[in-house]
Image (cartoon, rainbow, N blue to C red; front, top):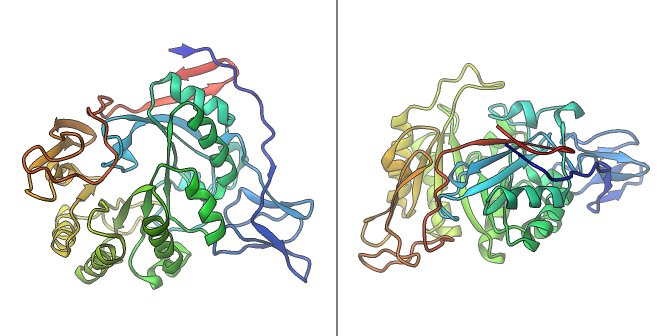
Length: 371
């Protein structure tokens, strides 16, 4: 299938705002806590922010590592427009160095050839609208590092009534954080572990800034957000770690924030670590539920109960899922029809019908090609 839509060739390097000069002649990037200090011609660890002409520029504006239409539940977001399609894209690079990265070919890329597709903000919004998507997701690599591109895409989407979603580790400084979340409707925050030593040793960052981002979302914004925790055997999957994280979520974020425990699969620099057993995921779910979190899900495994949304009041099934397929929809104006308890989230009157389909999209000067 091909839909004719002209895609304009863009200049991929644009000026950025979050940086300052140091007395020794270097320029420091102030987007995230990493604070890369660069001399002329050097790139930050994220790869796509660099020093050119004595300032920090974004080098991937209008360039993507690929486009795809996904079910919104794949982000994962189970309480944001369930069953609807989301137009997904990313760039390259990342500001963390996770040894277990599941998208390492994109996030760890140091080749501009990874950014093979050209598309400006209007092109992306137009394609999403034409393909019947309800939202656009910045994903695959962390959108924090392409903030300027994401911001302009969000503006174009808003003009068409499309919402925007970020899948991010939340590793960002306070000032850019305010701008980044100002143009988003929903987010999934990847909480790597509830352990600063793990962040330093395995992810190349710190826990504190991520917790600050979560508090900011809860207390200062109207962004709908959910939390994902990838459980890695013998690294962050102990009962104590899961319990402390769950208690913190209930206390600081509230019991209605959905939590997704996701199964680890050996990848990148942790291929010697075994996959997460289903029993570990189920045990973590029990701990989180006992801590008071109302909605706890399991990801990367087939588990009907772990996919299903239950009423926080009476326990009735509200949304039954099989992977990304919606089997049952028992919401009445966003509430349980049995006891009337509202279900936290962003819901439409009817469930979406996209299902589990994944549609690869190619944007180019010849239009929109689907496969």
